[in-house]
Image (cartoon, rainbow, N blue to C red; front, side, top):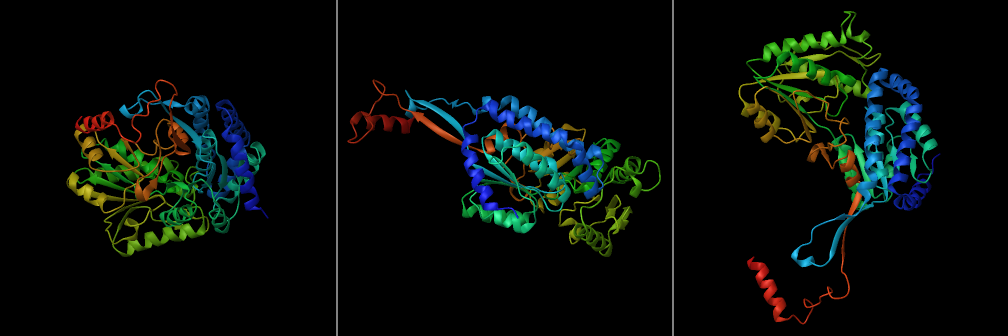
Length: 467
């Protein structure tokens, strides 16, 4: 039985040591973590295949994300840690003004199951680079991956600087009672609200990544076959269990039929190339557990009962949690599938007459984590960028913005997330920017602005107000 409070106290003590570590020392910790993870990559492959029938390349993609992040951060963390001089204002002339980025203390990551390595470790890179100790609570829905994470990471990292807590909601609830300095959470909005409330008890900062219904917009000027193939991949990858996956497609009515036909063809070409059935594809994963499979089945049943057209797919099999790639048309706002994040290889296609109509559909929902625009015309791209809001946007592709470039901050907006991670942004997120003003003594140490106020000081203030 893990003693959560004792481990937390050890992390709090360890945070003081890590806070004083140099950039080179923090970089060495990150490289040690990466080496241990890569050494055990086969264990991660096996765990993910057991959990979701993932193929090795899908897991390797997570490892590439982590490696890219660590390589980038380890080379630069020393520079990020240096005090940053800022220009003086009129009120601070003759003084030295700078910013120190100090660690927050102890960071908790409540991770999720759909990309258990990347979602566990990218926030860890940010936290450690900023000088924080780190507690990881992996999702119990990916228990094999959680065990490998614990054994690998706790074997590679100092005991008082990195801890992994396996278990279910009861473990997360106990962790949330402790005075962490920053909490990083990935998951749904319902639990996100609980995390924020718990964080408020200790005035902890939070980073929340909560997904949402991500629209893909296919303009009349789009390259239809190209768009269809990329969207098909974006929706089916990881069996649709990706927070930035396109959740529905808004396609201009003039190309809707051609796009839908091309979408179906692309799904077949990628995941049923041999014609033996989607359930035989080594690249098509399974829904993570029976509860989520039942939820997806209810979404499909509700859509069917309310009149949606199943253009393609719709087959499910409870024995191995198989959901076939599915394309729906004729969906309406009263269908649950248009109200909840789908998180499955199911894609509603909705035609629109003009751009404003597409905006109306998007505007009925909270701001998404991701938004995708497919168009050749610059005017169309600029219009949709200017009239929408999202955590991230990709033009003429999808999914490629997440974990692929550490110079790009990743996160959501309001309901889809709070805060950012990735590269220097992650370092900043896990740091306290401490403003420092140094007043030199001697001739520059002027005190004429202290009471009793002089006429000279009054004139200076009046002049400043008029300037």
